[in-house]
Length: 293
Image (cartoon, rainbow, N blue to C red; front, side):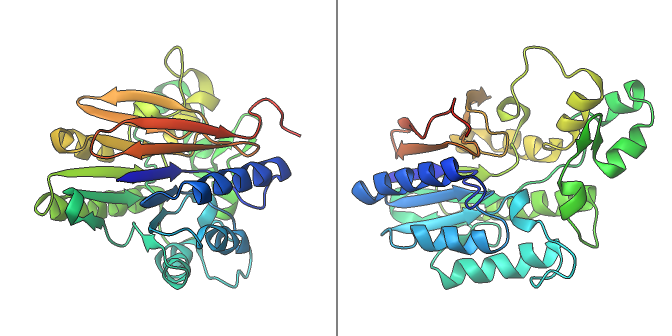
């Protein structure tokens, strides 16, 4: 079985990125995979559906987890608030265009003794909240407003819902655990796909621990310990975890699990081709990582 994985396509956002994405698509059309996984930040508003349509001609199974950009909304958004987009609008689009929405249900591949579970994943500040309390003056203000020293995280502007980050994170991890337990009763191995990094090791790479407001706030808004603990409990049956979001390629381990961050960016794209059951992974880059304009 050949599984293709990409993330952070950000379709419609950047001319060079769109050109690179078309190159990636042409490669897949020439060598169609059995399964295609799109790992979030596919395209804001109408660009999400436009991107799905571009890949819809590929044969085989296609599955999606959304990213934070995909649930951004504006005033009087025709799709509703961010929670409505996540729960209803995006799943409906995926169903219409023949994609499996992993946040709603796992993908079980019985012939391969494999399942794929996925989630957008979210953040509950647990990666750095204790240090923020000790080291960052006015930490509550910065966290509540997602305010860095020079600018605001766009989630603070465009994610609008009647919930909070901590509650939403708990809900997503509980849902993923339910799916994971269900799958492990049916198949031997499970691959996990998330948008926000599933564990610290495939978050933004640092040579030293985070320092200062901006680095600590970035970690607070990147992932959560709940999912890490879930992965630890079932690590012997989770050979591979894939994430996106940080726009940096990372390949590391989390106990017996191999974790990979896809690493595409606005102006170039990356594609991972996974052979199953060997686990061999080929990484391909489309576009120029250096040229941004």
